[in-house]
Amino acid sequence: NTHVADRMLIYEKILADYAKGDKYSCKYRVQCKDGTWKWILDSGCKVIKESGEVEHYSFVLDIDEFEKNATKLNNTLTLFNQVLSSLSCGIFAYSLPEHNILVMNEEARRIFGVSKADHFSLDHFFRNNVLEEDMPAIRNKVSWLRKSGDKAEYTFRVRNNTGEIKTIQARTKLLRYEDDSYFILSSILDLSEQERLNRILIKERRQYRDALTSSCAFYFSFDVTEGIIWNEKGENGYNSFEDFGVSPPIHYDDFVDKFIEMNNYSVIDSSTNN
Image 1 (cartoon, rainbow, N blue to C red):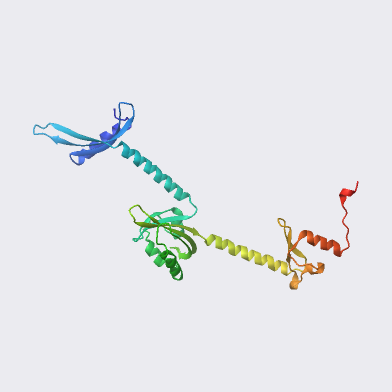
Image 2 (cartoon, one colour):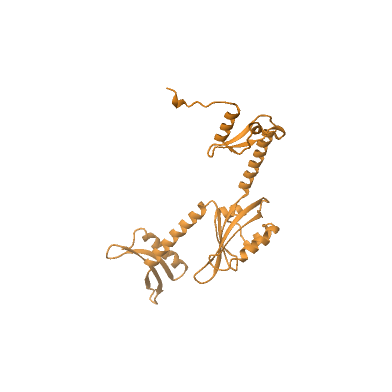
């Protein structure tokens, strides 16, 4: 009544253990009377009598509940690791007061510039990679984490192993285990790319503004949602809207009314024409 998938494994395990000594231990599934399968731990030894006869003594332990719980735990850990690896932010946790890393996902390793093969020491990293002028602010923020659930948020700069300086935004939370020991859970975001794009945007806006202010043409910006006109001054600060006696920002309807009034235009209601 041993599970067919386990039979060869049992044989190989017992032979391997006996090759090392006179004891063996293996786990496998057996079928119960009701047709269900149960995990057992089979531990035994061989005894050689004076006559040369070999006897085997076996002790069997029901470990079915343990195996099922272990499977659930492994599945949960697998899901947990998959979730961590899919996050776009870095996640890491470390123990207190030892500062030993408990978990760190791939994005956190990328931000810190370390690989799985590297031995990562949090204290060493902050001592050698975080810019010295940013450390006092970090210490001040973390010092206020005194009870489970306390949170802190701060920004700092790091120099990774390639020499690149990155701006990091961190959200940190103090948590407590059931045995009253504490650990820190932190999420981090790399703001370097955002800052790079902001610099490009500012540069393009400046170029756009320079192009407008160097022209004598009449420009304005129109907010189609709110119906508001914003002025763009021309060469030498000339404001074309002054010719109409108005000063932006102004609603489009008000500007049209003023334009019609100044030019003696009349508005024809097409609904009255048949």
